[in-house]
Length: 203
Length: 117
Image (cartoon, rainbow over all chains, first blue to last red; front, side, top):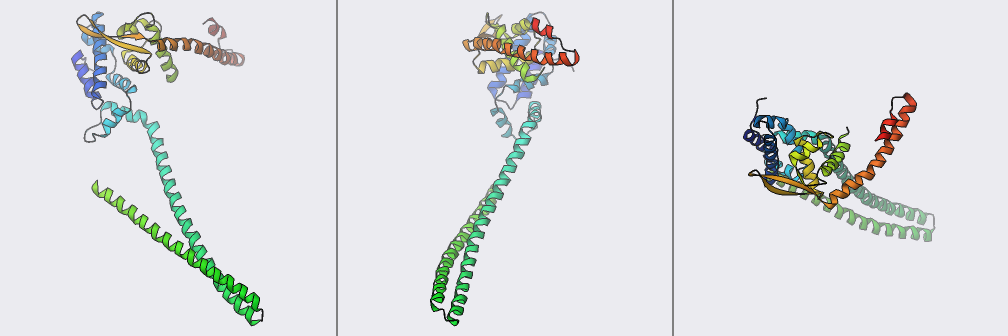
């Protein structure tokens, strides 16, 4: 590695830090300028003072260490340029943190989707089961009524007929509920698909 | 040394370096070097962190026609040194516990060394 003077070092440092907030860049440049000046005042040459600071990438990494995460946001807003050294370092260093987090978020989102789907499905199942079972009760009531009348047990026949009519009422109510829910679920689903499509088109 | 442990220790070392009088970056490094060698790049985040935590304050003053930052300890910083002292007793106790065990098992531990500190 060739020897750098103070100006070259600071320029290189600024280049590596670009993308960070200007205030943070200025602070770190001031710090390193002061360090070089103090080393020179202590009797070393400018080049040796710079060399004594060690690897510039290490300087960048250490500056990053105490920079709040809003600096990372600045990076994301400028996608059309090559990643700076410190950004690559940050992404690599952070990968044990963000990779599992991202995975966990994806898994949670998937779990929510599955749960919501299962919930809708189970409501469908319950409503249509009610319709079918009440309808079946109506049929059973009529058959029971006819057989009871045939064998002469009129009162028993009337009782099951009454039950059958009640079942018919419940079947109608539950069918109305089921139909409404079907329409509602269908509309919601279509709306979600439409908004998803629209969002993709605007991108 | 374990990074987390070293981080905490260096914080206290830097505070100790400015305890008696305000000091500047290069001076802090020089004062620390016989005990704890530390580089400029390592010191930078420590100073930022301590400033953010209000354990020290920064004043810019002129020196030889240029600006230099002087760091002075705050009351909170002094408290931090005090709490380190009491933490240290715990660490020594843990050290003794760990070394006692290795001493029994393989004679490789040196309990006396720990006691003298």
